[in-house]
Image (tube, rainbow, N blue to C red):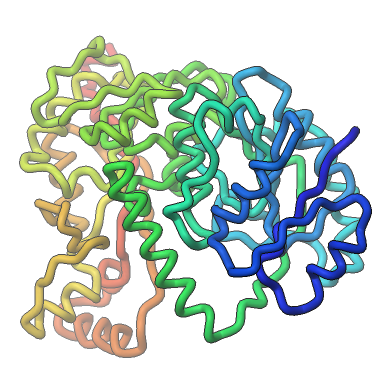
Length: 432
């Protein structure tokens, strides 16, 4: 198929501009002064003529069949607005582990990997920004990249949300791989990039009205607690669903699941509404609009801590869980060593994120959480802990705490968060 190749040279000094000018099949844009990443992409979009637009970072090596695969996914449905491939060097959901260690083996890996398979197309909320193919009709409706975002981070997140709100879907094509090279950014530029990234995040939070980094990112360990046949029809509710990333990833696995959400932030709930039955409301004051014993799963991901009265909320949602249903809870652990170490030294300071987040109104230990649900006739069916890397000082402090208490508490001092799967305690007479 025909394509046009547009390269934006951002005032390079390594001879790239001269090389581009020698090529007959490349249209070059030559900036005399360096511009932002988003502005550079927009310059290319403005002069492009094709029905699709591919945004491609310069830190990539393309592979056999990559573009054909992406194009096939993009036009698999008129509702698809943008698609992206997986890669080897990403911190986002498009990351995969690869079976090669040298570039000369990469092409062979890609030939075997890049086989179109619509079962490997997953709906997503966020494009990573490394490489994505978008229909021109979408750009015509929502506009190009936001040039207020001056670095190469978060401009793809912003356009992703606009794509969703326009009624389109975004696909991550897990049947398509391209190679991402390790960044060669000079050390002196890395600090500036971090500052620009932080500034971009602040701008986006203000623009969209919610914290994009704290908006309940999809949690694999939580989704793994849902153990059902993949084709089973499920009713799943997430309380405090944010923009719905976890719900959407559940749908990628359980295609017949009916998704429901409750989210009190309107901007976040508007995103989740594009693919789920989400209502904008506060769970503590909401009159639940669902039938009793309706849900197979109810998810509370870092929600319990943010409630004025978590005891009443657990009692409320219990009525809407099927007798065979489960509640999945992710909750911060107040007994984590970092909290105890600071507390014993006179500090209990709230932070933007973490266990002492400004949004947290209540604090729980392992025993407190167990009692909260046991009081409402729930039992633990599965349990796990998230442990983060600790410093040598923290490890030593844990050993001293165990000497004062018991080695039985060692895990509780190390656990940053707990994840529970609760089920009803059903009286014997209900089986008869």
